[in-house]
Image 1 (cartoon, rainbow, N blue to C red):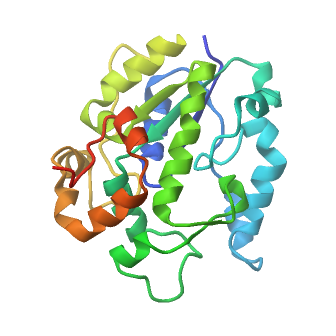
Image 2: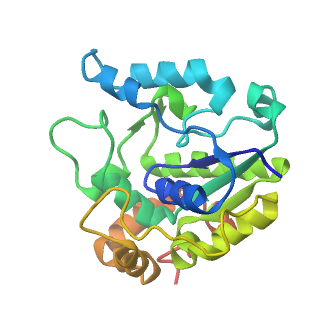
Amino acid sequence: MSDLIKIYGERNTNTRYIETLIQLNLDVVQLKGVVPGYIKTSQKILPGKNWLRDLYFSLSYKHNLGWKHSRVKSVRELKSHDSFQRNICFVSVTKNPYSWLLSLHRKPYNHQYGKTKPDFETFLQTAWKTDARDNCEKLLESPVVLWNIKNTSYLQLADLNGLNITTERTIQDPESVIDMISSHFSIKKLGSKFSNYEKSTKDTSKNFSYYQDYYLSERWRDEISENAIEIINKTVDETLMKHFGYEVLGNT
């Protein structure tokens, strides 16, 4: 049985929802993936917005294996840290790149742009500034490259008996995902009945039914132009997409 579980997944992939499902249903300790409250409080009175979070994960990496949104380090590096003195399991979360990019455009995070956010097509072709805790180069060609890099890094978790799951599968059937995690890692369930979390973890105006309809019915397609799809397709790793079961749009 696993003593610890570490969740990796980019921003806007529903990692918070999956963490909540695990907390409600499985008898396992989750390694911290975001900064504690005192860091957020300190940021309000200290200059800058990201250096303190970077410093926290740099100093605490050997205990928590980094920011949950980070590029996963090599298997050798992961094994070299204190957390591996206990039995640990890994789960990564991947989201359809088209819908993910729309989400990231809505919430680009802190320091990407000035006061004016670019339109979606410009955003897709604008360099992406990373933080140290991203574990990537400081400047990436575009947010599409960010999707490629982060999701490619999750594949190596298979060498550690890890699980790669998708946002869409979790939304479609969260109970089956919890069953899969429980079975794969021999993690005991907290009860015989599955407990879902119906509220949004970020937006009180939305709930589980909203997200099921939006993603499973692919309502997001109404928000993406043919030109935007062409821009994404020039850079997105199509082999990686197919690995996770995603259709490459516009290739008909």
